[in-house]
Image (cartoon, rainbow, N blue to C red):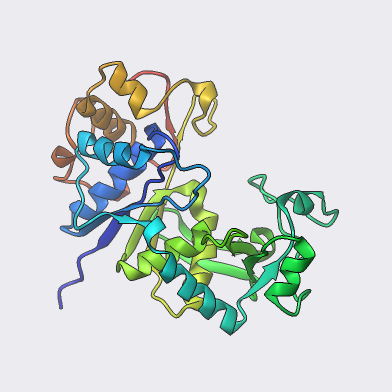
Length: 311
């Protein structure tokens, strides 16, 4: 029996402009699926309503087209899929996987028993676990609608990453996480799982800063009885100081490069060369990288941006 063709996705968020790190992840995800004659979907993750910028979704779509990164089927917008997320949340509530939480972010940060994870994020101190008899009681305590948190009932989460290899996360460090916000909006971890499962996604390639998200998403997949896709987490693009790209490294937005008259072929060619996919630096399109593409060629260290598209 012939192996099933992969189904991957591009999932940008319309909270600002695409930057060099986004482009690199999108390029690798596109190449990995297209080189094996798979299907590539586009999903606009526009649930983070306070941060979504007007016109950003249309700009994202136009930018992908300008880069030469095409996709299959209609575009999916998360903001139009709230019913699906609510159904999933109700299943988790019924199964006892989640509990209502009355804590504010500030209260969590101030909790004396709240250590911090290695990435600087606050570990939730289980303040509301088994605290309330109902969602209404939690909301009354908070004097606002409560959120829902997923509870880890196992000591660790193990999985095999297609790039990073064997991964083991201590769930005490991951901590119980929000799956539905106090405004009723599905949180990232739940929405992504529901969408990837509904769209039949079999592979997820993204930056390795989201490795811990994979662990959180895996427990949701299992709780909902869904097939877990293969995860592939690639090194990030970093500045010369070795830290992930930020404003201190200069403007690395696609909008900036386009204003500077940098061509899409120049960007794609540099990303391919700096990632170890080509032996020499030359301008090219994503399509020209398909022949001989192998994710194993990818350098395992962060890609270093030195401020210009040169060797």
